[in-house]
Image 1 (cartoon, rainbow, N blue to C red):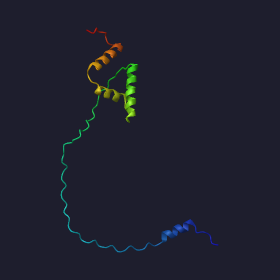
Image 2: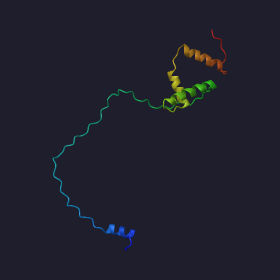
Image 3: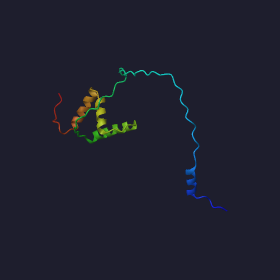
Image 4: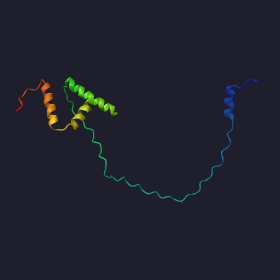
Length: 126
């Protein structure tokens, strides 16, 4: 019985194998001359969709929230999270400001908040 060939012998035999010669390259047939037109510049067409506004730097300000105000911000943030976004408190407050409308409901909410605010001087409502 003969022993199986060693791995080094197999590798050496693979390296020493001769590769069949490649067929002679065929000369390409001459093709008709193709003229290339100069590309035209892109025309700026008016966008039908409004463009995103450029990001602006805001200024840092600080708000003091009562506990119930913080709960409202967290409630709005939780609702937004259910819609598939990850909001920050700042974005929640900004969105709420942008959706707020003037009117009697806003005036009542302001008066209720003013009652809780200890910094404001109490004025008599005429």
